[in-house]
Length: 374
Image (tube, rainbow, N blue to C red; front, side):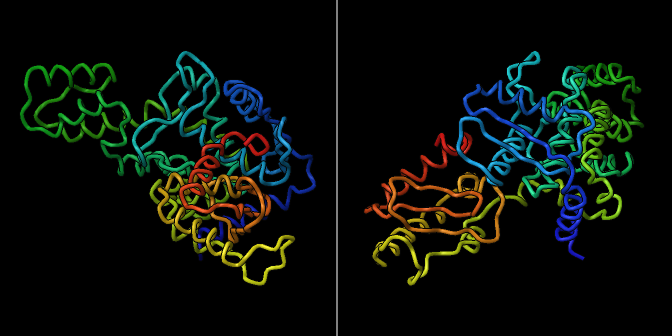
């Protein structure tokens, strides 16, 4: 009955059916420039005829890290790129595939990006990350989500809002149709847009209909090929049967941005704190352990959602809650994360919260640079 559990069971079964297939291998060089790393990711996900549900092995050249923590780091990086844009120059300073406001993002209408086959690549990235339990692409417009998961155009158009229109000039012009009286300049703006998009110009009887037509064109019609390509890429990863059999899975694969906000309480509930009689290699006073764990609680309590996301990235490799977050207090110079084991090792030498917080912020600022390079 639980769509979240059903989705995970589906992905686990899909992976188990392909466990003996030749694995996919992705090598990311930590000494490459950001442009070069982006090109590596794009080339990997542009591979044709790849089995995206096959075992995956990610490696970071120039970094000693191995294991599933590296896979988590790569998936987190991929989702970050889909949201913020790739630095590969295709005629602009950044290649942003999805644009618009929070929870109203839609595919870019750029013809260059569409012709470069980047939206099919994006669909593969979305499905691949989901299969492996990784971060999802949050904040997409609901009409776009409906079309991506097999819904009809009419269903998508019925939930359109002005906020779904990423072009602010178009949004302002379309909103004029909600007015009863227009100036000559406003009528000219509306008529020019209608003629440009090949729809009738406004009159006294068609304003409501025209509002819906222009909004649908601005949000969905202009990017129908991009949406089709993203959907094609998602299908190639093997998760399409989930959408067809579980209509309630769409908000699991494409969650609202607010639903993925991380809270201090949600992190604290997952932590396994040091026990008084833990058998460690080191003999650290109980008072010291209590003080350091107290610093950690304070740090989590005062952290913003973005800081908590970076904390999880440092701790386990990606911004997703793992069931058991382990903390150890040890003799060390700086905090160390063993991402494969969900373990954060905190040095015991801190005498003040200010010094502890300074080093933790340094760690959080390093989450995109890998592991051994921190």
